[in-house]
Amino acid sequence: MKHYSIHTFPIKSEYKSKLQEELRSQIKEVSYEGLPRVICGIDLAYHEDKAVAVLLIMDHQTKVIKEVVHHVDIVEEPYVPGMLAFRELPLILRAWEKLSIEPDVVFFDGNGMLHPIRMGIATHASFFLQKPTIGVAKTYLLGTHGELGNDQGDYQYIYDKGECIGAVVRTQTEVKPVYVSVGNQMTLDDAIRLSMEQVGKESRLPEIVRQADIWTRKLRRELLE
DNA sequence: GCGACAG
DNA sequence: ATCTTGTCGC
Image 1 (cartoon, rainbow, N blue to C red):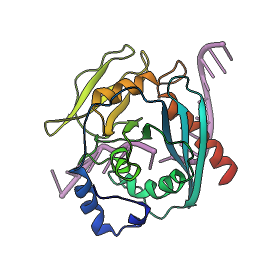
Image 2 (cartoon, rainbow, N blue to C red):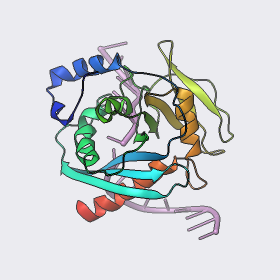
Image 3 (cartoon, rainbow, N blue to C red):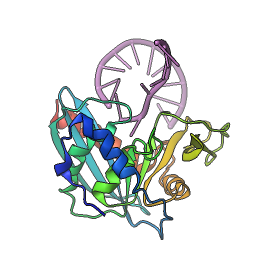
Image 4 (cartoon, protein in one colour):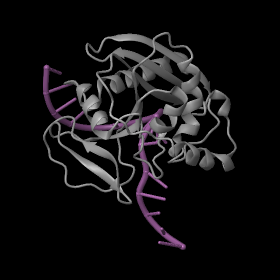
């Protein structure tokens, strides 16, 4: 398989769709073998023309944070729905180089295959990180699904053009659901299971995503303001 | 053509 | 994403 690196960026607009097409054919939805030991959560925060990317390493079982790294830089790419990876990946890859612990699975704040052409940031990033990835989004992007139950653990698969591309998951009883999708190298049921194992009592978000969110805001305040 | 649209 | 005002609960 071709190796993708930070040197791919920045990329000219006319080649963005081409890269997405090239990567999408390499998605592997294979079952995830065994339990992940350490996982990684990724999130970004913005202030004016700068952003900080935060990568957090956590023990999947105990939920103890093992390492936190970050990278600050100016962001040139605008936010365009469907093209989030081009805006956020450059910073994420810089921060990734600072990690001393190698995670087994990576969680993203955003979608994986739950995307117009199955190339959300979690999927896109997997080709650069060479790790199984999961996308957990807080709001709806696209697709149709059946009526969702109100109990914790209820979920409905999301379909688009006849394909199952993700699931809307009720992570807490009577609480707004989250949108889970495969990034790469696992099945949707794996992604849902691992996400639910990360959900604590205090949030609808998996703990790794919640902690990445908290640290990102803390570092934005300390480093960007 | 029009509206919708992860972060 | 970020900002902002008001409200509820521990």
